[in-house]
Length: 202
Image 1 (cartoon, rainbow, N blue to C red):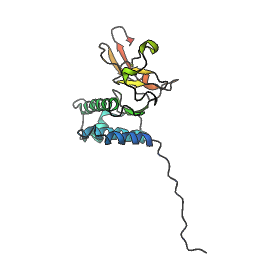
Image 2 (cartoon, one colour):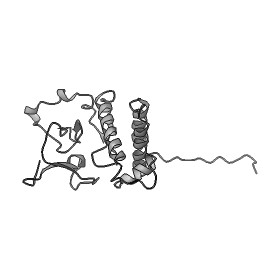
Image 3 (spheres, rainbow, N blue to C red):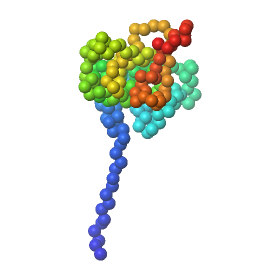
Image 4 (cartoon, helix red, strand yellow):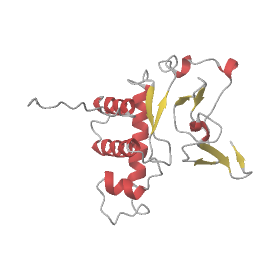
């Protein structure tokens, strides 16, 4: 009988969010949030929840206490810190992906009214193209994601949607549902601008 130790092969389970984690790490390493430690904590917190499978709507209270070091008596009605920081984070994400990371085919989004990140995959052939160089409106028409604060969004079929900028009137609404029936691209249906005077959706 041999006295040599028996080797056991250990199989590591592949991380299903390896690419998303790599994109998060690249963003943090870029330095765009170097002077905003609060935004780093916020982004890390919501992304870690996403990676762990917690895609249910996140309450302001939980973000404040768990990510922004607020005390347990935090009241979102009296303290708007979460909404303010989320707004700042959205601006930084837009700045990052319209500048140094404009060629990234996987990009992080944080839509208004939510604290659940979206990892959006762009068509490789379109990820590096500036908005002004997109297909002419005469050929494809003008597409506006009503109520969206995104600069632009490239859909699963390659169509380009502009964000809802320079428009006034009505009220913006957001649906946080992660799945929309009979579409592979729910992002374009999650926001809207509603004209309250006539109850029309814009």
